[in-house]
Image 1 (cartoon, one colour):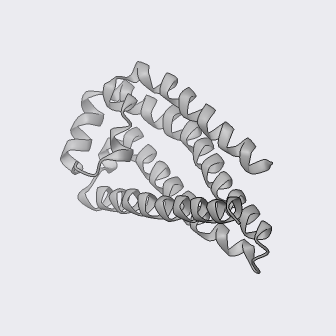
Image 2 (cartoon, helix red, strand yellow; image 1 turned 90 degrees about the horizontal axis):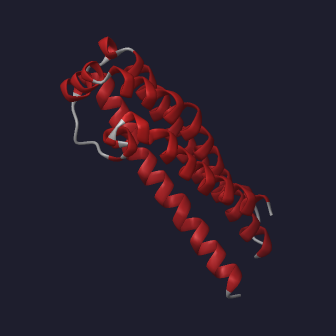
Length: 161
């Protein structure tokens, strides 16, 4: 039951985040830094300097706290759902299915914290800092994909067993 609650809360926070992101402009509304790795340090620094209100709004409240709450809900849903399914199937060590959602949460949280720091202090933006953020962005997508696939597969096995 907790997995259903977390999934519903994740959906609600996603809609809420869209509402709060919109006033900061189309770039923030599209969450461009979290979904696209096609920018470099000079692009990010220029955007943050030219759009200081949008950069601050992206950092807070969009990334922190709203995206953090979304991350925790989505990862919680994926972990609880996979564990519940594995337990229903009577698989031993069902807790291991929390590892991919946990990895996703850690990658996404690291991305949010780094992006927030850079957006609030554009003078910290370097090629290295942007490369680190992009690494977490790519890892976030990979680990979320694994967590989603495992939850879907376990749920399907449970539903059709």
